[in-house]
Amino acid sequence: MPDTWEDFLSVKKRLMLFSALVVTGTSFVAMFSKFMIWNEKRAGTVFDDPILQWMDPVNLSRITMPLTLIPIFAGLVFIFSKPKTTVYFFFAAVFICTLRALTMLLVPLEPPIGIIPLTDPIIENLFYGGQVLQKDLFFSGHTANIVLIGLLTDDLRLRKLLFFIACIVGFLLMWQRVHYSFDVFAAPFFAYLTYKLSVFSANATLLKTTPKM
Image (cartoon, rainbow, N blue to C red; front, side, top):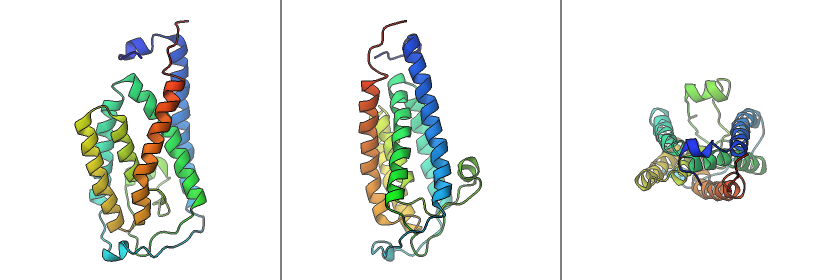
């Protein structure tokens, strides 16, 4: 597997496959944002979460959003610096969107009682038409995404830091009652599943040795 972008993109067939993967991953993210808007209209179930009852809800959006976005963007710098981890990332984009859509379809939920909606004008206007989502529930995307970025990076210290931040963000989401506790606790397991599926798919397809054309 080439370690540099120049070597990686020097193979025409690999370049074509990589371009198709980027388009596919980006398309899945766009379709998933449409799904999230549609999901807000679905009826779901309310759970009496005993863990949330221990915390009075507090609006922590101004802390949670930068604590989510900054580590993710920092991790992406490391991920995109190498062809292998970049390929893993775009496969992961496909799988994480698919898994989240499936779990929300199979486990329709209403927001926890007492929810203070998590607001981020940038994300809302970029992906959700200015709408503040409240049914972005099982499983927690914020927590899963940070864990997934940690798994994808090769830097061990950054990985440990991202895992620690994911724990903090998960707690803040529960404190604000944006998520049920099981949304947060399940997120790392789905992130790990996404990572393993991505590595397997990448190594079975795009990262296989490809002769020059």
